[in-house]
Length: 415
Image (tube, rainbow, N blue to C red; front, side, top):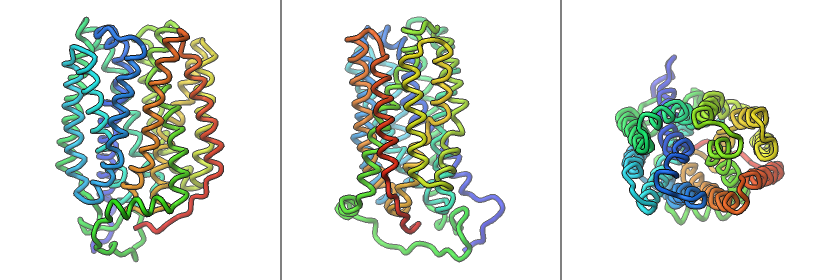
């Protein structure tokens, strides 16, 4: 076994994790936030159908989240991640080619399937490369890829839309699909599944650490048995559902609300969205490290309460000052809960089962995400405003904070 060297390859893995999340979520999911107004006009969609396209993406993610985690426990995560990143790229190109609602919906669903097959396995790989004491920090950095996606889409998409006239939204999807394909190629070339396979210990692991025993991958039945008997996993799943429901309403309709109800131009809304991406880069790192120090439930509860304030201010304070306060609060906490949740799952079941169990709790997260845009789009159609939808998101987030305080996360072995 090689001794840990000054520069550990785990940091390369972490960088690849950031890139993967950038493509799978930051571009494929949150790119729709910037493209939504132009795409809605180009395809002649009402608010309900525009919300349903987001729901389709999230339903695809929901449908494959568990399978993506399970596949990565049975086969090489590097190949699984690369395949589904390529699928995401092709699905975004398909969305750009769509001439009707049905084709656009298919593209968004396939993009969600790719995200489910990518995001869970890559977080599992990152956890495998870092010691328990650095797990929250590492997953916090990995999920910051969503911030880079917001930054890129907020800066690039308005210019593409302006230059492309009526077809600018199509060109925006082609651009994002191309970037994602480059990420897929990078992953297949440089990602490695485990540190032990390269003859090194996980980053931050004690010198006395020994490789995990080589046992057969757990069966799906065994995984479900472990989940069924672990109360903490079900508790985490309920917390994650409330996060999925609340944050996706805000993330999906952020630009639409600013443009429609507050009077921001698309360019100014895009700049604020980009600023959210830039500031939120450190949110996962900050709260992941916070949870390493002060505990997972404390970190989760505090984040939920800050996000409840974020959504409530967006609903009732319809001035630029209120919008900037809301954006700042979201930036501060944006990707914190996925980071802390991934670390908490690893604490409970260990890194070997973490991808599969993370996939399980993500099913509930996905249910929340599917319901969020579906409900919010119909609220906007019936009331002529997103205020009530953001208020509902605030209530769900507050409930998530209360539920988090009741968590009893007990650490398992790191293996």
